[in-house]
Image: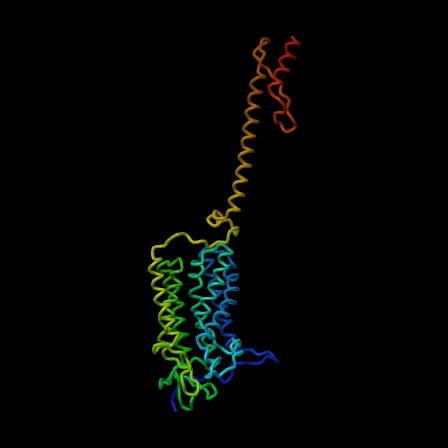
Length: 365
């Protein structure tokens, strides 16, 4: 027997009356809460409005859960379909039993974020960079759900931190396994802090910090995935291609893609929109791109110009009347008397009023 090991929980579900409380779900929810909290703080520090990340997180989480489950079922289809299936096909919907592919969650969750950003007029790259460290921390927390479910563990090991696995979950008596959930949790935790430091040091924008997250995560996931086994009857149940697991190939492709993206956008420095149009008055850049807003501004400008011209005309009339009423003697016929309305504005035809005043003055003499 080994002198040291990591025990696996005997229970992954607790019941509150007849309501099941699943540890896997709790880990996922806690990870989401931490990610949203941290991302909200980072967004406000960047000049964004409070509550924006919370609003965006709703469609992102919904889309992400669907995408994560789809990726898991597609890449591990033999678990649910075919002659080697160990579960019924309908169990592919049982998300609480574990099985969320991070890349499906990121891909489809990204669609939810894109839709929310488009509706609010925000830069997708700015949001992606903001949430990158939070995603890493959420993964670090969520991986502990695999510990409770006794799943996604590695090959046998004699290391003192080997993981105990029950017989019901594919383990063998006296055999310890690599705690790959722990390796990935530690890797993601370190990656999250590294992203915060790198973002401050190099001011990466336009999605470049998110690309660093993708490169960093896939680099660690590649070697951790190589340790994993999915045993069914003592045989690795995972899908392989050219000697590598599907998730390893995915890591390679995404790692290269992230590096290419960082290189291609290395000189991109245009301003990013981080404030929702109409939010707090500091969103002139976003408003300037809104045709409706431009039309409103044009109407207001035309009204202001018209009022200004009318005011200038009234001032000119008043000045002319004042000059005509100053008489130097009895022979001065330039005097005028222009009646005014209650607001002090000239009323009627000023030329006709002046002629009538001159005629009255002549009759008086």
